[in-house]
Image (cartoon, rainbow, N blue to C red; front, side, top):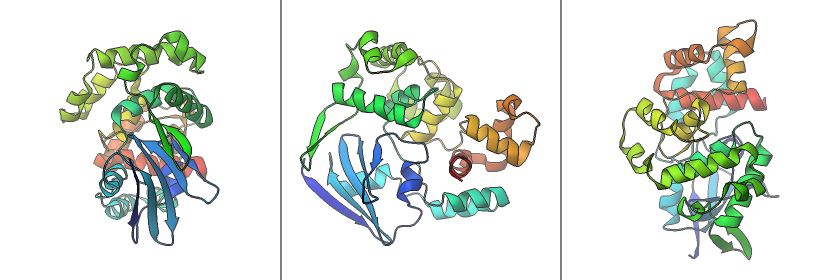
Length: 288
């Protein structure tokens, strides 16, 4: 692979911090100059904002322009989405304004499944560390600018990894879950190709829930943040429950707020854009 460059001129709805620090991805790191470098789908890219332009530079498994347009979902009109959501109410308008540069990435399904299993009851630095160690030990090495990077390992590359070997990477209770899910995928007990073909989001969720370590919240994160791209889901964690209760439900004890009640409210208010609304609300509440 050779180094390539691409410039997206006059970019709208594209802020590096909003995209890479909103909780959807774990393999992008900020550089001293404010740019971000990441590894995804066998590519290594540095992304830098210069004025109103976005500069992409790195080595790619294919044409950089096509890869960037797909991964960063550039064909979707986020300006229109933000306008639609901002009309819902003042709370939504404020959260959209705060995270106006968010874009939901088209991440590899397999990597997203494993990454969000690792994310369960975990914090961002630990998640990133575990994924990095997993990739370094079992993924394919990519050298760029005299530095070594590692692609996320495929299911095949993890075929013979034992529970004990996962434990040595610091996975804790998640070791058995990674092992079991990898074996289920390899045996096609859950067929990832068929998930792309299924139109009913609930049917896809039910399949994902068969995987070890995948509960409702992790399943919804996979549906939203992978290249399955289901915007009608609404992942609920402690931050989302808190913001939905503070802004809309206003129950005395937020820890007792029923998740179904939040999901129903999200569907009613945000419809098919619930997943994107969730990201704006989550990012706004957590950061601001």
